[in-house]
Image (cartoon, rainbow, N blue to C red):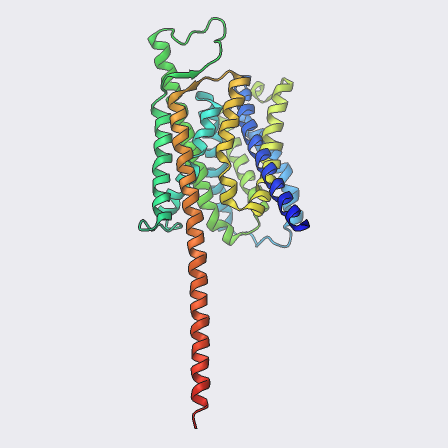
Length: 366
């Protein structure tokens, strides 16, 4: 009875942790949009975010992985720099640009396509094997097509309005063709930037796998990635944000959004996600991603007054179906591999036993 209670307790802890994790992610979408709305620079915001993240992660990586870090080489530093270029600079930069033109709900919906995009990249580079004759291989391919199709629908088709709040005084969604055309173009650009964000995120995960084999100290790798990402953003800021006024924090809202991005999104979320993956596995953790989209949609509707359009709902639904197909395919593939390994081991054991018995019988012949 005690063991059953303990199991339920561990399962409940994992579920609560996953819900908190998705709530933190959802909050980041809303907080980032608030930061853009109050005028924080799209370059200054990630600079401050990565400074806070580096100050948090650096000491932990230094003390906890002091004996695990392999020696640094020039080749590793170049790989860290490229990893930061894809996973920090391009990833965060495209995200903020996409969020500026689109909405938190669709930013979260587009992120559901990351597992499928990662699968495409991994298959292209030979990191992922696909067997279309088996159910798991077919599920991964169909899931990828559904996810990419959903992202395409969100980008190209807005559709009629489903839920909306009263527009602010002086604004009118039906104002003139020029206004509507500009709004649609901005929305399309936002979705394209978010697609770039998803591609960067997926590329970061694919590139990270071989680097982790050479440099398995995960916290140190994350710290180096944050460091080089910070350097890259500062280089961009030297050309884009030369006005000192843009670097000044002028309100409590700005302090809150920057601290949330640095402490919650780049600090607590990393630790919580690592714990959840350790307890439940990456597939189980990834399967909770659509919960984030629902949370963001509700929070954006209530807090920001965002509108919900049919094209986004259809696209998000397709992406979620695709995500679950890819995750199911991965789970089934892992189960098949384990079964094959067990059958192979059993076969070898039986063959070994049979050979031993034959050898024993022959030794008994006079």
